[in-house]
Each structure stands twice: as C-alpha cells, then as structure tokens.
Length: 261
Ligand code: ADP
Image 1 (cartoon, rainbow, N blue to C red):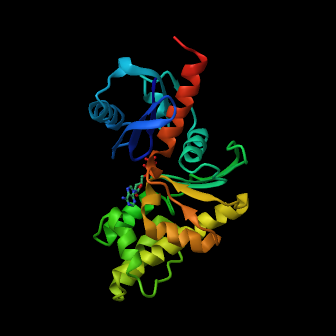
Image 2 (image 1 turned 120 degrees about the vertical axis):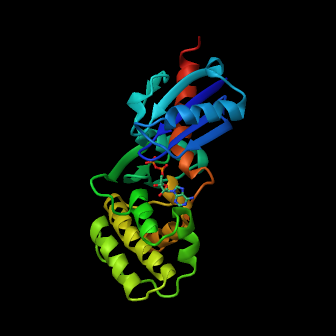
C-alpha cells in the first residue's frame, strides 16, 4: 500500500511516498512554496521518479503553510504533529526537535512514546530563519548551500548583535567594509542565529537526543553553532528537509489502515 505526504512550506514543496508506512520509495523537492506551482510540480516529479500515479495512492495528507490549498489531499494536518512523527521515524526516540524552515523557527518537545508534548515557535520575525540566511548569502554574493563550507573556514567569527534582518544586513555590510573575511562574517551570522534558537530551546527545556529538521539543517555551520549554544550534540538525518512530508505519509498510512476501501 502506498501513501503520500506533501509538505507545502513557505519556500519549498516536499513530497514523499511510503510503502506500507515503512519504506520511503520516492521523494521529491521543488524550491517553490505555498501559492506557487511548487506543489503540483513536486507531485509530477515524485510520480515520474516512482512510476506511480494518483490511482496507486491509498491516502494523501497535506501539511505545511500551504496545506489548505492542496485539493488532491484526502486530509490536511498541522506541520507540528507531522514533524514530530517524521523525525521520530528518522531518529527513533528523538526528544527535542529544532526545525528551521524558510519562514519560522520551531522547537518541539516529544515524550518517550514519541508524542508531541509542547512546542515554542518564532514566526513573527525572520531572524534566524532560512529567509534570513538567504538574504545574508545574497549580501555576501554567495549561495545558501555554500554557507556551511564558508563557516568551516572561519578563524575569528565577527559579532553580529542585531537580531532584526534589516539591521543585521547593515552590520554585515559594515563588516565587509572593514575588510573582515567572508568566512568570519558567515560564522558570526550563524552564531547570532544560534543564540536566538537557544533562547527558544531553553524556554522549553532541552532533552537529549536532539535532532534538527528543515532545510536549514543542511547548513553544517548552523548545526554546529546550535550544538555549542545548547551544549548537546544534534543529529541531522539525511532526509531532514522531508521530515514533515514523511510524517504526513505516516499519518496517511494510519488513516488508510483504519479506513480500508
Ligand atoms: P519551508 O518548509 O518553510 O519551505 P524548508 O524546511 O524547506 O522551509 O527550508 C527552506 C530553507 O532551507 C531555505 O530558505 C534555505 O535557506 C534552506 N536551505 C535549503 N537547502 C539548503 C542547503 N543545501 N544548505 C543550506 N540551507 C539550505
């Protein structure tokens, strides 16, 4: 039995097909999010990769910011429960999840049974989000996926004290004008983001094991800065950006089993 989970985020659309709620048989990602053609394109790619069509799908659940606009789904559910389910599949027994997507930062706390117990979210401000890092990468004339490599070359990270994206951008420009190296500026940006997330995590309490999900988890500089701030190792699964879609596909499997056709 195949179930489909789609996570339509603020900046990208991710989709996964699970076989019998156990094995991922196809995944696709399109860097366009809610309100765009991202969702339909990601489904086209997914079906093409897997050689499947809608007729093969027993149940589909949509999650993420744009979930209500995806009409092909049998159901839509919040990304918080999907992230908890998906991360528990990727890192069994995970107790704290730091999720950083394009537009928000969330910290989730799971109990020993893998159930979501509490969460905190920073959704009103871009600081520390993927969007913030995308803007900073633009100012530094690099790409977001180079940031981790640049961070690893830093010798003496600069201090970025503004948390507001606009002010932080002016600070970055001043550091460039002063001749600071790009790696030191990148590491300074990552440290300033990590301090904010650590504040959120401390409000919730950090229990190990800790895992990180979302596209920003692919940036090793961000991950290491957060490990230093919270004082605990952070596991990053290869499918970190697919956690929400995997959770939706797992939930879809539970639904399909309880409502067989
Ligand atoms: P959303 O669900 O809100 O659309 P995602 O979890 O898909 O967000 O993450 C999108 C963000 O991930 C982008 O804004 C970008 O900053 C970041 N990102 C994506 N790929 C990479 C990468 N290879 N390296 C670093 N950051 C990345």
